[in-house]
Every structure is written in C-alpha cells, then in structure tokens.
Image 1 (cartoon, rainbow, N blue to C red):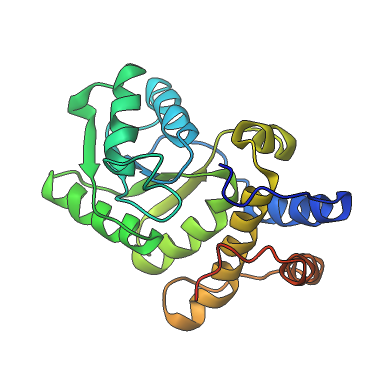
Image 2: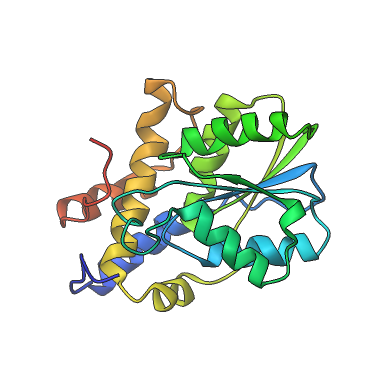
Length: 221
C-alpha cells in the first residue's frame, strides 16, 4: 500500500489510535448460525475468518466483495474470490463457503450476503461479522439497520494498532481508512444506511484534526 505513503506525526498517530479504539466494539465471540467476512484490501480478514471456522464458531462462511479503488489492483479477480482461495488454502472446505462476489460497499456486503444465505437455505438467527479492526463499528451499524432481527457479533483479528500499521506497511493509508470509516459512522445514519451511534467528543475532535491534516483520501463524497 504505497499510493498515499507520507510522514505521520506522533500527534496524528495518537489521534488515529483514539479513533481506532472507538471503532472496536468489544463483542465477546460466541457460536453463530453463519459468518460474513467483509471483503477489503486486507487478506488478514480471510485468515482470521478461517481461524474462527476451525474454532467451530460457525458452520458456513460467506466471503463477500467485488472490487473497490483500494482492492482492484491487489485482488484483480475480486475480493471474495481471493478471500475464498485463501480460506481454502487454510483448510476451510469449499462446502462451507458461500461466495458473494458482487458487493461494492458495506451495505451490499450485508444485503447480498443475506440473500445468498437465504438462497442456500441457511437459517440465520445469529451472525458473526468479520472485518478489519477499524470496520467493526461500521459493519455493526450497517447490519443493525439492514438485518435488525439478527443477533450480531462483530470480530476482527486481535492485534494492536502498531501491529496493524506494521502489517499494512503504510501509516498514511491506514489513517485515511480509519478517518473514512468514522465519517461513515457519523454521516450514514442520516442517509438511511446505518443506525446512529454515539461518537464521544474527544473522538470527534481527533477526527477533525486528522481531516484538517489531509487524511481525507477515503471519505465518502
């Protein structure tokens, strides 16, 4: 990830950490009827989904995602296709995987995956949403709006902010993404895309500072 590589100050990193922590919803893992791994640039989502499958937390895994500006070069055949190949390399049987290769945003991840599960005859009462760490809160808010009757659990690979930055290799890119996800958490309820959630004043202040510093490459326009 080098397209947005630039210097990041200690204050900016601290603001990003504050927002990162807000994005984590802190759900306790428990067995669910099914899981959805939300496609992205981060193959670690598929890795963690595979770990949770092997831990017996769900019997069926939807791998959802087409392409986006941040993934079309990394996963040219689509996020879901590459995620599925990776999951099978890690021992998830093809029979446990449902491929949803068309979603272009989080709402479609949820909506299209719901339709795919219904078509496969999977009865869903509880749902495990597996995403990047900083996408937990947005995926929860989106699913609560689009699938309100499902008992939701959000999960991401347990890791520190510094560990995640090192795994991606581009601090500026990650901070752009963190800021963009918070923008969606703040603004999407008014557009009908998600349920409203409280955003503490210190998190909002960190968000404004990072925007003013130019971390705006992942904003929804």
